[in-house]
Image (cartoon, rainbow, N blue to C red; front, side, top):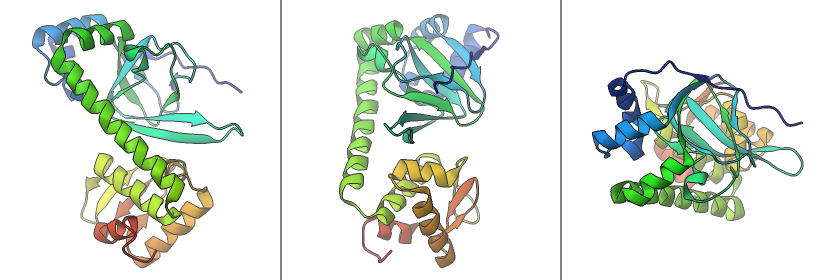
Length: 247
């Protein structure tokens, strides 16, 4: 059954200078001039979304590009049998739902807030204009999309040929690089429903991920919690990911 998109609460309009400052977290905007940022601020809008709210569905018109200011968002797609597959986890500073900016009429996947988040929405037409008129911005967009393409290709290769332990190890290492934070115990990855999300990201079943994480926890490689995973011995996880250590 199709669930409706929650209407995000638009933030009260801040003054132009403070609004432009909030956009500094967005990587694509960091090298733009103050004049360009002012235009972007006046064209788009900041929105607050709650945990579990949908920002858009696959097939919806791609009228806006989205930039995550704070929080965490997952990009998902449903399989024919109704299973949800996570395509990507979006962190603060990243663009998502930008397909309209490079010509796609609809969103190819669905976006859901994993926690309370703030999003900046920019009309796709404005994004396309930036790409056409600001060469440095276009170059940054190309670099961003190239990185995502390489990551997607790596995930496809893993799903096709690699053992499940390697896939889970590689997924954990990617998450650690992207969203991990150092603690006294190791590299901590905070992720709601961590085992379910790991299963979806690594193309494994929930029971398999639970079994592998429990075994790695027993060996002392990680500490597996309900909402987080802490990598205690990352070098051994790298060896599993590279198939240099028996799983």
